[in-house]
Each structure stands twice: as structure tokens, then as C-alpha cells.
Image 1 (cartoon, rainbow, N blue to C red):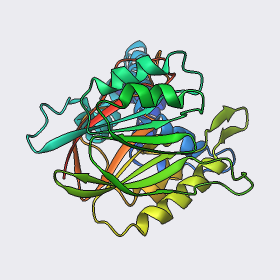
Image 2: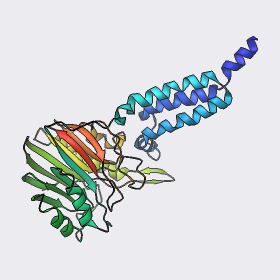
Image 3: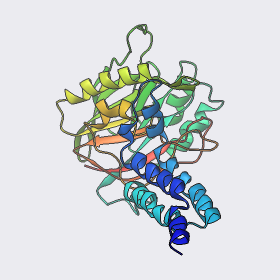
Length: 313
């Protein structure tokens, strides 16, 4: 009898240990080193999806008829809901004193930039930030947004359209080492909103690639560090950063930026890829302001979905 009871409790120990490992990785992804291949950043980029390991392990636990394994899976479930459960909420209605901003990588091969611009204008946002605005597409964006957004600024392939006056517009140099002067993907402007002046940054960090050697994100990380230095030196108290940062907020490669700013409120708001979004690599972050609601918008002609956020100053 004792041997049978002992075998019963030993059954499924491997599944139980795997469940505990999933919980540890959810809570402490920083334990995974970033060398070689920036494996840690790769895990952090898709961290919420690690929860899919739980139903797989549950099937194994049921096949083993193991109470130990089944019960142990409560640990990663609790960890996942602690970390991401709050994001399941839509955030409700925007406060009366909030205004809306939109962030969108419009794609440099967008087949209909004018239609994309009209769709974004239809949100009624006070600010619209765009990336991958090519020289041939720029006139279409300017024409479609002119009526509702009389103030705008572009630097390189990033642009900001505003219902509020813009001053102090300048290029933000976030070029990684070895990148030529024609690569301009950052700008800064002061928006005179009804709630006061806000420093608005628009940025497009370098792309990353996933290959056999892992995550190639060195240039992205370098660019993030440069952007972080500029934001840290920003004299205005209130800051809004809108941009394609080419990773999620859990990725340690973005820490030079995310450590300075407040993360958004409820909503996963996955933005990439547009056909089957699995991650939010487009971001809207703030300082001395609160994102009360974040959501992805319907697809345009881009491979990214637009994001909209309600912000309270």
C-alpha cells in the first residue's frame, strides 16, 4: 500500500517541475541570459505567450493521472494572471479630461497612404504619430490630414500631425554606430495642448531579426539607449513618446527608455503583424501623464495595426 501511494505521488513529477519552471520564467525572465543570441530578450518579447505551456502541461498531467502535476499548474496560472490579468480589461470609457493620441507605422510599401491617413483622422485624435513615411507618400498624408491637423512636422521618415500648435521641433539623432546621416527616425516637438505644454517624441527604432543564432537586436538596443539619454535630459516635465520601438515593454533591450516612462493602462493592444497580431511592438509611453486606455485599431494598408491611447495630463 505504501509503495503504491509513493508511486502515485512520484507520478507526474517531471510535469510538475516543468510547470514550476514556467512560473519562474514568467516572474523572473531576467534569469535567462542574453548571450548568446539575446535569448532573454526573445523570451521577454513574447512573454505572455509562455502561458500557452500550461494547457499543454495540463494534458500531460491528465494523461499521467497525476494530482501532483495538475495541482502544481496552479502556480504558473497564478503567475500569469498576476502579471497580465489586468491587461484583459478594456479600460472602459476615457475620462472627461483625457485626450486621444494615435501611433502607427504606416509601412513604406503602403498601397494607399491617403486611405490610411483618412482612417487615422477619423479617430479624432489630438496627435497622430507616423513612421515609415516615405518621400513619395508624404504629400498624400499631408493632403489627407491638412483639414483636421493644421500643425505637423516631419524629420526623415517619422512625422507628427497635431490639432494643437507645435513649437521646438527638432531632429532626435538615434542613429546606431555606423549608420549614415540619411537615416533619420526621431523627432521632438512641444505640443501646446489644452492641458498645457507636452514634449512629444516620435521614434522608430531599428528592426530586429530572429534567426538560427537568436535575436539580432544590437542596433535596436543601441538606438534605445540614445533615445533614453535624450528623454532623460528633456526639460519639460510632461512627456509623450509615440513610436515603433520594435519590441515589447518586457524586453530588457528597451530598459533605457522604459525605465524613464510610465507603461500604459489596461489592454494588450497587440499591433504586429497586422494579419495575426502576437505582440505590441508599437508603444505609447508617458511621463507625468497617464495612459488610461490603450487599444489597437482596424488594419490599414500597413503590416502594423495602429494604436490609440487616451491620455490624462
